[in-house]
Image (tube, rainbow, N blue to C red; front, side, top):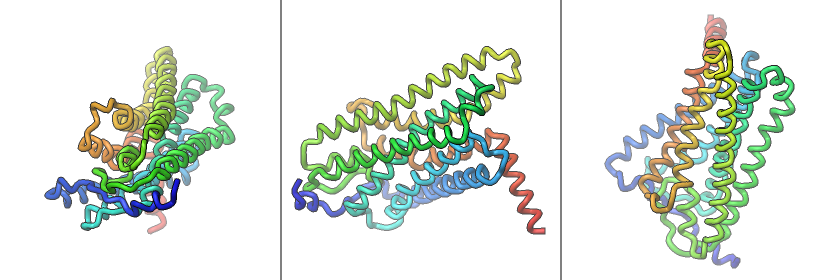
Length: 313
């Protein structure tokens, strides 16, 4: 690839929400609110589960990693989006676009795989409770957590390099608010068939396969729960899985519809709305879901407030 081919486009212009000019201030305010909720909520879960000894279990170990991913995910996209809504400039450098896409793919793929690891953790806890502490020891937890990160790093690097080594010597405007894969790929002035095949392959392997594994885990979990003799035990078992199941439904519901639906159903407006959901709204809802439906986190939060009050006296 010739170097001059790669230097044709030096910056990417986001059209973003320019067609909603009258709603710019409202969009800025709403996105800022969700961004702050996502940052504060995930940071709070991260701090509580790290400092409270009662939350030093495999489930909360993976939840801490999920919070890190959510913080990274939102910080990769939202600050730039808020800047574009606040000012007239809606550009990003070509290199900056590549970096943004890399981290977007990294955090997205890692989260897909981590959610399947969390489902496996719940499967062991409910279906094999007597063996849980032996199977989910610290070494095993670190290994299971490192696999999603390793997959995310490799996939993000491969996809970013394959896209940004294409020639970009034509238009440099995308009807989006961040450097998403498909909108950027459409700007390439070359045959992108191989890239589209690679994207489809990655989508099937690292979105569909983890989702199938999650479904399988929950089928086995539900069968085990239904076989429990005591209604109270069934209720407790369901409650330990409900938060994770809601998060999985929200995350996979939006990402699957965004990247796996047929081309005939693609729409620039729907893409932007779906992207807002999984980059802004869902990261803000996840800590709320885990906090409101988890007695241990609420207890840890109340203890932290109690300690804070005692120090201020």
